[in-house]
Length: 118
Image 1 (cartoon, rainbow, N blue to C red):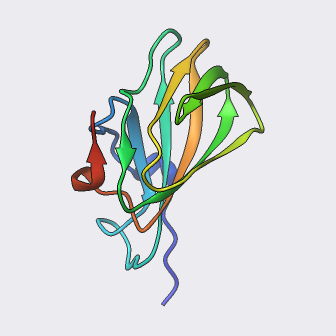
Image 2 (image 1 turned 45 degrees about the vertical axis):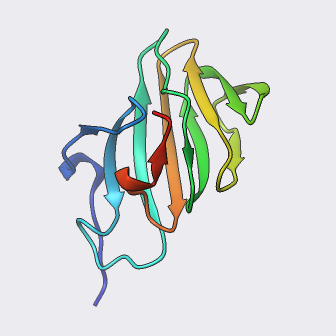
């Protein structure tokens, strides 16, 4: 059976790291087993709490805005079209220079219980 979820139909919530997300596909709204996909937003001047995930490998893909990404002490400017790999166990933080909208992909799926330090 095909699963199709529309972004606009998903209710936003605040994650343990401080970003506001709308889960597009995860264990709560689809028969997902191995990954999750969410849209996250940060207001200009905002930032996620510095944190890590013990189990999940994570990708951020910037859809709009500009920010500064830190992964295990290395910082880089990020903007629309940039993708960031965040390995399991890597401390990371995203600071928004302007309002940011980005996709978060996690494998295994995102779980509050797998977020540490936030």
